[in-house]
Length: 100
Image (cartoon, rainbow, N blue to C red; front, side):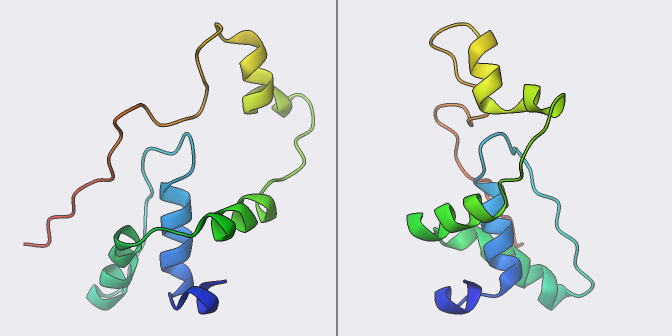
């Protein structure tokens, strides 16, 4: 998928993870300034919806009890009506990167 998008795998992975519901931060590791620049490049593009869906499906593991209690479907049964679980808050904006 990364090749189809013309992006390094690390950028696609970081971009996808940073835009997943319920993830407020992504920790990246880099062993060189060039690798750090590559990772930070993940914040400069949007994954196409079909790519996001393919990654979501590929990473959706079967969740067995008792861990199924942490899934959005289970949580929606116990959370007050009108609230959602796992989505970023309204008005969420990606972080600004200070490269100075």
